[in-house]
Image (cartoon, rainbow, N blue to C red; front, side):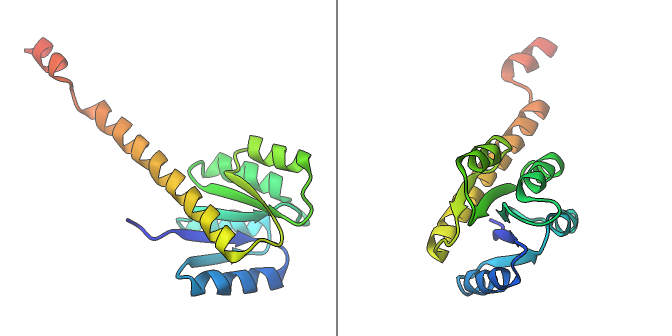
Length: 148
């Protein structure tokens, strides 16, 4: 099984560097982006499994970034993270395809747990896609008999 690759997206440099170090100490592969636009560029170049995305950012905010991630990279799981949560932003994020929604500050263990759940969800989806593709190419015994 491929090792999970995470990306933290937040405009707060201190949060990015501290959280990256803590996650790497736990054995995670972590990339960082300081904006939504930078995150999209990294996603084009790297196979990222789970994105931890801040809601409030200058320029392209977290909800806009989430929508674009889901449009361009539908298998990437996204966890929204914010210090300014409102019920509306949580609902909007979840409706737009976020896997989960967490409040800052969040403990590193909770963050890890949520990323592992999101990664597991992605792996299950990838397996369903593989099975569907295999079925498309495999014929049932009934189809084989009909052809002969």
